[in-house]
Amino acid sequence: MQGILYEEPSILQFLFITIFMGGWTAWRTGKSCAENWQSMTTLVIYVLLLGVAIRFIHHALFEGSMLTLQYYCVDTIVLLLFAVAGYRFYRTKQMTNMYYWLYEKASPFSWKAK
Image 1 (tube, rainbow, N blue to C red):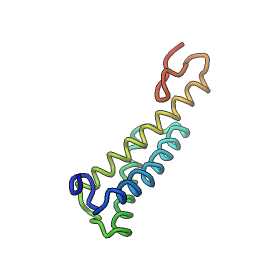
Image 2: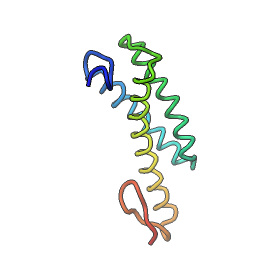
Image 3: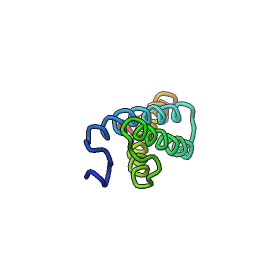
Image 4: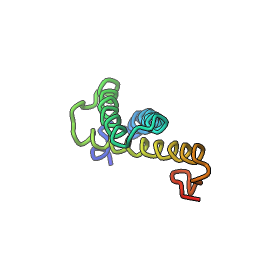
């Protein structure tokens, strides 16, 4: 997988920066967009910018390439998964708490009509 999904010599660097640091930041970005009633389009724009920031961290700390489309896409897709999960989790919480007479939780990431 080295060379396809990540460029670092160790997967631990990819896991630490992209999964842990970037994933947590993306989750919080999704939470923020959901709590402020912003659209999914806004979330995607934020994640695209976050992908650039994560590529910069790879570049600054581990001398990774900054402007490689392949690794930018991989990082951004991973971040988008975390961000959408955070968005759906908190939007479900919002909808079921604010409109409790209309909706109930179907799962941690979705709601259904009562």
